[in-house]
Image (cartoon, rainbow, N blue to C red):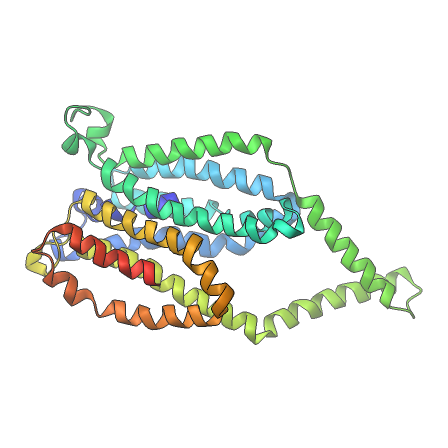
Length: 347
């Protein structure tokens, strides 16, 4: 999540410095393609990575994904052309297939009584990235301009002003890659559960005496199970809603970042990358507090559906707060920070 969250505070300035937009109003157009390249790659490779993890193991999938972050996130920070930025982000998304396998790994490495806790820790790690990522991107981009006493214009960080946040994230990824040495492989647990389920199914087939017939029935049952899974309207509805909320979250995050740094003559806020990073870090902290402290309480006493509906209603209210943000731009920036943070905390 760090390569995603760290990008938006400085994306506008990066596109501006690449001089691909003919006029200032077009910067957001070109920035959208850079932001979308990563998710396009993930969309294409999500299912193949899941198949790879089931065949060769979760650990190789995790290691390859982390290595792709080290390589392509670093190259993105060294981008000198617009197309180099798009290609490196696209390859990063294409080779970063950690999202699904890491959740499967969390459920397999934990005992059954701790599986919910393991998966919740994976989810909470994204909330932590919502705090750390924007701070890294906002405060470390353009270091030669922000910290001239530490970084000179002639250094690599001066010649590549957006390399430092990418480099820091790559170093963190390298540390995570080393930690993978001690990760146990859990694929055998998955196969054990699969074999056990097949054996139970075969035991229920009383009139099957031939091994070939058993294998055929086993395969047909698995195909029927997959078809039933796709026909499960409750599951497909949940997936669709998750897709809609993910679209809202990502689009809102990128649109806000581009709007906040836009000039006031275009009704933007004229924020710096540091201010945008601070806003997103505060909002990420709100998400972290909500997930760890508030949501478990709501889920326990109100169920899972009511908080979800409440968030959907509040999401529409947040869209109409834009005019309020612009009217507050002449007040101290921290007030705007807190108003924006309330959006994330409430949804």
